[in-house]
Length: 524
Ligand code: FES
Image (cartoon, rainbow, N blue to C red):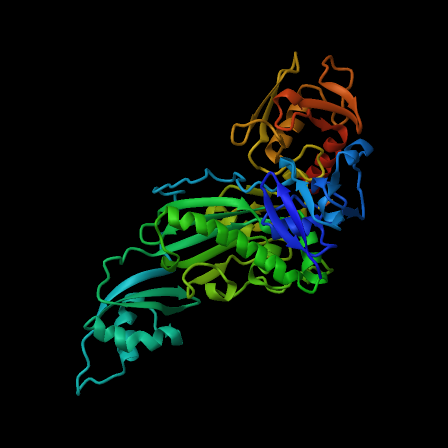
C-alpha cells in the first residue's frame, strides 16, 4: 500500500505510515510520547494536536470547541491520516521526557539513606578472589568440584551452582589465571551461584553494581548502587512509557488482557523506560552494563506482573487474584534488561491483589515492623496504599484513587513534570497567589502536590467550604465564572507557559475530593 508522510513539529520528525494510521500511532512511531490518560478511548481530551496541513478523518471530535476545531485542533487518538500531513504538538500534550522525580544527573557518592536499626549492608551479589591448589595425580578432582570447595568456605552455603555458559569457561579461566580466579557470586533462594568468572585476582574486584528500580504506574526511577561500599552513586527518573496505554492500572490491565499483543506492548514499554534511563545513567557514572550484576524492583502488583510479562488479568476480576504474589528471581536476559545478562532480577513480593511490592519495600525501609509506636505509612498515587501497625501487628489496604492526584481529570492538571505548579501560597486578605514550579520555569499546569496545597489553602482561607463549594462572594477578580462553572485563577496568562490562565474549577475540586475519599480511613 502507498505510504504517506506525517511530519511532527516543532520536533521536525517525519514518519512514513499507511493511510488510516492514527496520529497517536504515528507519534509513537516517531518516538514522541503523547499524554493519553484514557488509553486512546477519546474521553480524556489530553492528546490534542494541531493539523497544519493535509487530509485527516476524525472519528470523534471530543469536547473541542468549534473555534478550536477551526484552528485544526484534533484528538490524536481519534484522528487518522488520509494523506501526507503536517502536525504541530503543543507542549501540554506531550509526556515531557525531562520529567522531574529526582534531581537530574545527580551523582551522590554518599549513603542515600541510613540503614534502619537491625539492618546490615549485605548485598546479594559480590566478587570473591580465590586461590585454588592445582590438581595432582593424588588429588585429581574435577575443576568445578575444586572451585566449589574453595567457594564453600567464603559463602557459608553448601548449595553452589553455576550456569552452563559460565561452566564452559571454567577450565580455561583456571589455567589462564594459574589457579587464581575472581568469581562473581549471587546468593538467592538459599543457594550461591557463580554468574561470572575471570582469571587472576582482578584489579577491579570492587566494581560490582546493583540497581534499585521503582516502577510506578506513572513514573519509573532507577538508583545505581555500589554493592561493594553500599553507596548510591547515581539516579535517574522518567515517566513510565506505559502511560500511552492509559493513566491507571485498570486501563493497563484491560489493554494487556483484551488486545492480542497488549501484554507484550506493556511489557516492552516498561523495559524501554528502564533501558532508556540506564543508557543515560551508566555512561555518566562510567560503569559498563556488564558490571551491573543485581537488580531489585519495587512496584505495585500490576506493574510487577507487566514488568515480568505476566498477565495481570485476574487482579481486576472478583475475587481479585494476582497470578503470583511472590515471583522467583529471573535473569536479566529473560526480560531484555540491558545489564549483565546473567544478573538476577528480584521483585519485592506483593501481599495481595492491589497491595504490592512497592508498599512492602516502603514498609521495610521505614522499619515499621520494628517500631513500638503504632505508625501509619501512606503511599498516595494513582493507586493509594497504606499500612498501619507496629512490631506486633500490621494491616494493609489499597484502593484505586484514580488519576486526580497525578493531574488526571483536572482541567489544568498535569504530572510532576517541568513547569508543574508544586507549591501554592495565597494571601488570605488580598488573595494574591504565589506559586513555585518544578524546574523553576513558567507554569504549565498543576501537579498532585500543588493540588493538595490548593485544597488545603482554599479551605483555610475560605475560597471553598467544607463540601468543596466555591465561595463566589469573596472579593477578588480571581474568582470568576468560567465554561465549567466557578473557578479560581492561580496564574494569569501573561505568566503561564501557554499564555492562557491556569485555573482550578469547582469540578476539579469535586474530583479531588472523590480521590481523597477513596483513600480515606475512618478512624472509628
Ligand atoms: Fe486521546 Fe484520551 S482522548 S488519549
